[in-house]
Image 1 (cartoon, rainbow, N blue to C red):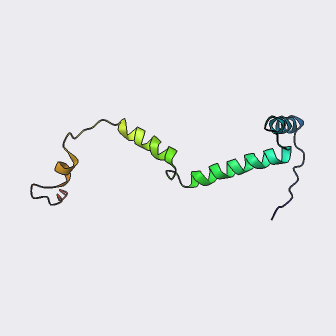
Image 2: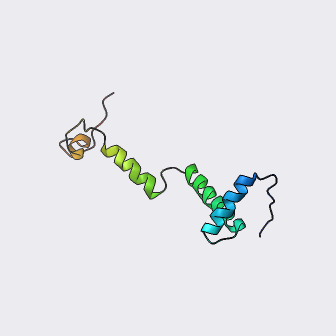
Length: 91
């Protein structure tokens, strides 16, 4: 259900900005402001769950690739003993 919201005391320069943005995108000022509000809401929702979108996953992968490799062993050699059993951590 649609609701009505009035913006009071909007500075004139801000109103001109939204009017120009709306004209540039061939929308009403109302539709342009709604579009921006929806985009911002989506951005904020995505920020609540970082790492859940492909861009953030790929950025994390690139950061990990930049780390120096300290242990040159294959992963299997580092994790499993000669009999193929998981190595126990030394305490």
